[in-house]
Length: 569
Image 1 (cartoon, rainbow, N blue to C red):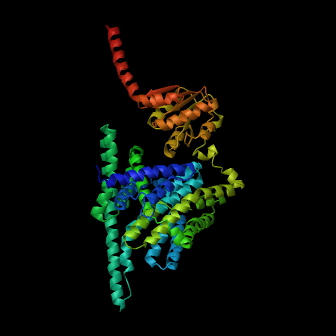
Image 2 (cartoon, rainbow, N blue to C red):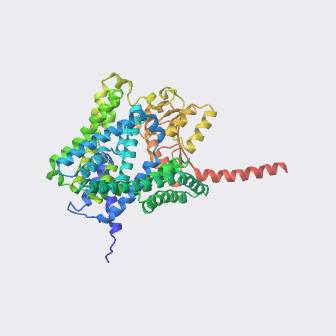
Image 3 (cartoon, rainbow, N blue to C red):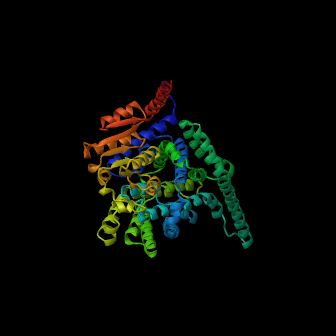
């Protein structure tokens, strides 16, 4: 019995192939995005074997774009941008202009028109948030001055690309303006185009105003109402409904792109105190559809362009890894920042990613960019992402021998601290607490009351900063890494409390800690009997299951009141 299930086949093929190639990429110490793109190439029509439905894949990719942009908005931090605005804003804008000009020049050399050149150049000018954040996290650079500038720079790039997505549909009208028989006709055509652009910008302005005025009140109110219902499933559904609903409504009512609607939904939601929980609840679905987005992008790529247009591919790659990087280095140095900062920013920007794909896809859809341009962008993206770790290694080696490199080494604990704190390495007979969320913050406060010295390991920057303001020593790192546990002086610690809710990650921490200190008392949390057994099998001394403790607390209260009543009798 045969079944015609193209949607299921496309999703299954995309996710299975993405898993296989991402695993290979991970073994080669490459970003998973490389594996996702290769999975799409394998499933695409330009290679033999599996051929997924490209039309369905493009629709799934639209959902991926919505959720990707929602995530960008959800993590948009105006505070972080303002802290480095003096360098990030002018630097990013000048670098975008330089890269766009280089891309335009290459496009004109290829015989494309000016509009195609602008779209091509813009796609080459913006780096991947996913790739940059992963590289920064792996090298412990996010909390350094270099890391803050790089992230702020990328925020400006993202905002510029959001504006480009708004204006891109108006470019076809602009490209049709030709100087006809007289200046009057040309002026009339130009006036009509400018009028159409003004209408487009007006619709966007109305949408933005409604989001800022109505959405800022409606969205937090809705989320708080759902949160107080106590249903985690309903809260997760509310977050997804906001992301997808606002994106679709923006497109239908205001002719605004899905991407822009989703970005503003995330940005409004980021102002709510429930934003962190919203980000956690939507993360699995965002990750899944982001994977399908990258797979669908890979399906559009014709790998034979590397053979047919070798020199154009190399020129495109040169603009990404040399042109952009050189421009960024010069700009940073002109602002009198150190050599190490300039090299880090240059390495960070020597790649392109998700926004480039979105721009390329929209450009081809609107007829602004030839399919060859999209293939060149995809080739440049894949090659630059593969090469990016090498640029970071080269930058680190160039900095390592200098005095400023020694002064700003990424693994120094004091570089992570926002305020002076006791060096964790000097603590002994202390408790190490992994996670400063709802459970961890309560545990830390109680330990402080008992006079127990506490070192907190928290990979969330905001939670880590909050813990420091409350007087705790903090490592803003991921406790899964053995080097982090060593820095925390685990051999001299008495207790390790693992307050993170993810049992898989907690198990890895337990396993690492037990090998470093076999006599350490390790306490972890779990949500099920299976998680309890898993953590104990890896070496946890004691595992607390929240539901069981709540039940015992309820029964304990009844028992205590009965005993009190019996005593009074």
